Image (cartoon, rainbow, N blue to C red; front, side):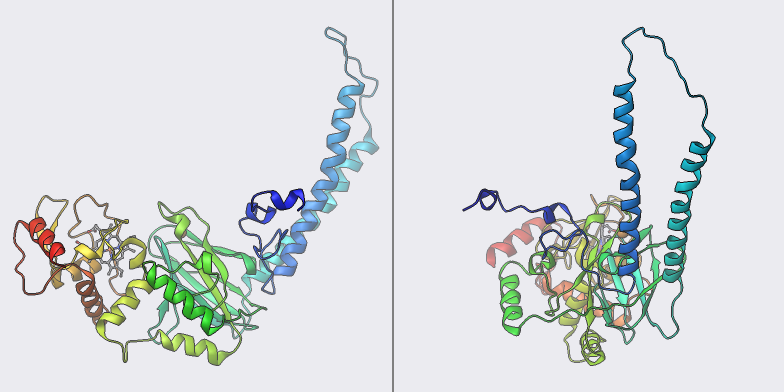
Length: 389
Ligand code: HEC
Ligand SMILES: [Cu+2]
């Protein structure tokens, strides 16, 4: 065993958060769009030019400081006051490089801003702290699913603060500004494989046993079995900014992409509870509300439906269907005690059926039995209920 094998599991790639973790010394993540080659070339060009100047300048600086240093109190003397050719050379020479960098950068910028005709268009909404992609046909999902070798344009808007959408593998990044639409486009050149059915089934089973939270980082594939590229929010936007991540899945065929979209389109055969659960997972509720009783930015849904709610105003209400509805459409009307009024309004974003399904889902996960009248001494009742279960 060599020395290096005895060092704890740690590689350079661990330091490079964005590096391709499957390669040992990858400086960049996989290059997966038509922009990547240009962008990387320009990056290295600028880096090497800087290095080519920095090294001799730094060496020269130390050398001259040493060569011409004088003892303390020694008198400064200079033989050279001015050298026109030298000054022209070091002013004009580097300016060629600077102008070159500007032109290459400007060309690349224009490429990024010029959407080709016939690009597929998707609408992306950013909100504290999740992404939602609208695929039409009633499908909203936090993952971005697109087709290989097809230009895709994202129309992006924010319902609260400034966010920024960043897909390192595509070398694209654009701010999402509240109050207006911004856009970006790209053409993916690499598609994502699907994992085997066995591997997926095993992962789903383990996830279920461990409490249901899908771990994209540990698995490196989605709950539908696709490998993916990372998608980040890269503009600090508050407490859970670091969790505002999602993934991009590039499909090989249009049939496959459509099948994936249809699977998440409007409720057809699903029960209200099942559909409510998919809304909970896909519309961002999950980021702020747990269903296991743990406290996140918002209260857990485990103790919502049917229970008494102390409000910030000092009053309290019973969490019935009307209250749930109001909480989703107009969250600031009744703010739950000890929580910040951080919930975004979903007015206009959820249909009546969506609201109904969400309410049914909340009912199904909360500790509450329909026939029991909810009394003032609610905590006692809740305790009793828990003991009985
Ligand atoms: C950014 C975080 C955030 C997101 C996203 C979010 N909520 Fe909330 N939610 C809160 C906070 C904080 C409260 C408590 C303060 C208040 O009442 O406004 C709350 C309160 C509620 C309540 C009242 C709960 C109770 O037990 O009294 C309901 C119901 C609710 N949210 C439903 C939803 C649904 C459904 C979604 C998804 C469509 C959602 N929330 C998305 C933060 C969030
Ligand atoms: Cu953000």
